[in-house]
Each structure stands twice: as structure tokens, then as C-alpha cells.
Length: 169
Ligand SMILES: [Mg+2]
Image (cartoon, rainbow, N blue to C red; front, side):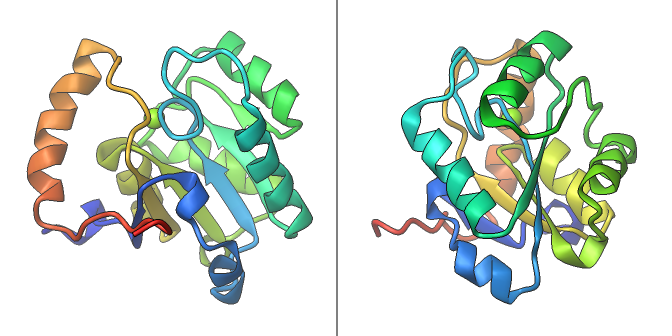
């Protein structure tokens, strides 16, 4: 299993991330994916549970930035409702948007985590920069056909790593 494709943490959903444990690791900055990580791909609104999670990040002293390959319009609407900065058309896994987000947050590789649902964009991009990478199970199966093909490869890769952790387990 290539190290660059292996997340540091694999959880069922963002709600299963132990924020206190992240703090203990020295993480202050969160770069998070949007689609299928925070909301299903078709969703247009921030639900109350997500809003509460974003608030708990902020009150926990984390700085948050959305980094998404989605369009400007889509990212902008979530950026506003969540009151966080955001980068659209990020071109993940390329470095550019991750570095830009770290610049916005004032973060460095040792104190920044990346959360996302895709190994080949979120985890690969984060690992290449030495960030703490957190993989979540995708929220929805309704995706671009291209993404669906990548999922097939991901499933093969995921067989080699442990089951996602859930607080409900
Ligand atoms: Mg995603």
C-alpha cells in the first residue's frame, strides 16, 4: 500500500473525528473538501448538524478553509453560509490550492489537516505536502462518471487499509 495514498485517519464521517485528539497532535488548521465530505453531491444547503460541527471547530480554536474542485458558485454559497474562506476549482491533488489555503489559514504542514472523501485528490494531495490526512466515507453515490471510475480503484486500495472508525462502533 503506497504511503502517499494512505490516510493518517479513516473515519465514517466528519462527525467521528475526535477534535480534542487533533488538538493534541498540534493541529490548528483544517482544510476540508466540500462535496461528499461535508454535504452530499446534490445538496445545496448547510444542514443544522453540519453548521453545529463547523461552530464546534471554530469554538475549538480551529481555522477552517474549504478547498473544492467544484465550481465557484457552488463553493461560494457554502463559504458564505459557513462563514469560512474557500477555494473553488482547486485542481486537487495538485499542490496549488492546498498551499493557497495554508496561506489563508496561516498554517504549516505540521499543524494542518486535510479532510476529504477521495484518496486520489484529498489524501494524495495532503500527503504530498506532509499534512495530516483524514479520509471519510463519501456521503452520496451520485457523482460524475469520472469520479465513479476512480472509486473502483479506490475500493481496491481501501481493501488494504483498516475499516473506517466510527464513534458508534
Ligand atoms: Mg469530495
